[in-house]
Length: 566
Image 1 (cartoon, rainbow, N blue to C red):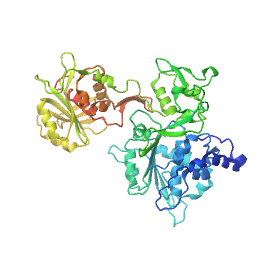
Image 2: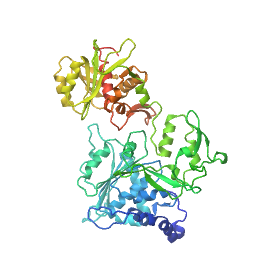
Image 3: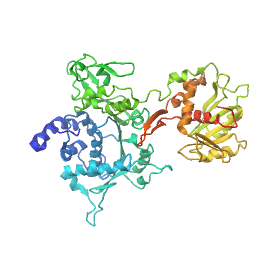
Image 4: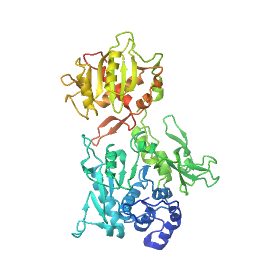
């Protein structure tokens, strides 16, 4: 999007404007709905405003929609909530900047623009906002600086810009261990924009939504290059109408989505490209799925929703749509077995999430653990361990001690309403050690623990959340306070390894336990590199995973030194 236009205003300003107008304005007016404003009026639509006032995004870089036709409907769409699951450098961030400035200028709206960190906010001011004003005399004229008259509220700060009578708040998405984001406090706004939410603290956007208050506009835009399945922007995309870009074949007329599978013809066993269309000419092209001839990937296309009617609109722009991305470079980025490089190719080029091989359990892994028995107490001393994950419901898992083959039989898995039912299950299954999620309902868990003076009930704090005991080591027991402090990644590794090696056996009817499989499949193990070069493993995921943590607390209970052995 930020490339020189074929005709520039410097050579022929009128021709440039006509080029934009003829290619786009008819479509821009298609089914335009009125934009809500705080004080009424008839604002310019975003595309018209952008063509008129942001012909240059920054000095020397033109607003070039003819070469990026997929952006037109993204500018035209006025749904209350829109999700952009995008490839890198595809034009969405510039769209969001225009959207925020346009809202302040034309709709009398205050906007909260969230970025991952305070450093990103500072960089935004220097690399995006300042150059945007420099390239547009109109924008420069409506931004009120610190030197405003005494009758005007001026604002010329890194984190606050005044545009006419309204404000653009630029904030980093950091959230403290206490769950508070002080930089977002007391900011009543009409519109919330989250840019690169996958790099942001996952709690930032929900906190930002609370700032919309009673605004009549209440619009939300979320954009990011995805990372992993079920996390961040991909989780938001899953609940949207999921629009994909379709173009017609110039030879047979078939409409189809642009897909890497229609470039690469043969992959090797390690999923690297071997044969692709255009290889003999040292290039790559997308072939029609019907006639196999070359598609014009820059043709005028249409966004087609997978789930029409959903209130959240979702767009998925990729580098396959951009004329400034050589397709051969995209293909060659997949010629690697390095998981980090493969993830970058999926994320940055295709705008798709990528789960590393072996990074999460599969349905096949769980089914391989099934045996011919049913849930229920056994007639021998099972020395049972219990794990309880606390939420709206209490998710409970109970397992017996390892048998002679090292298998840990699951005796119970289910969700109950309250701690009275947990107590009944403890008695029914003769539980030796029960470990309960200490957060977020610490008071209720403490009250339940106080009713068991035999040291059977322990409250677990994952390392980095809140600590009962400050000692080192993956699992530390604090008998004085009834706490167990556990390394989240280390213990989850232990728990999931027991499904991989089939020692955590499951009853034949486990599929009848609502959400059990779904919760066990949610966590994704990833290895990320810190700024100092250190590789760190952690589990990520936005989907519900209560049974996974109940299994983990159960595994921790089995590690109690005075209980039964691991």
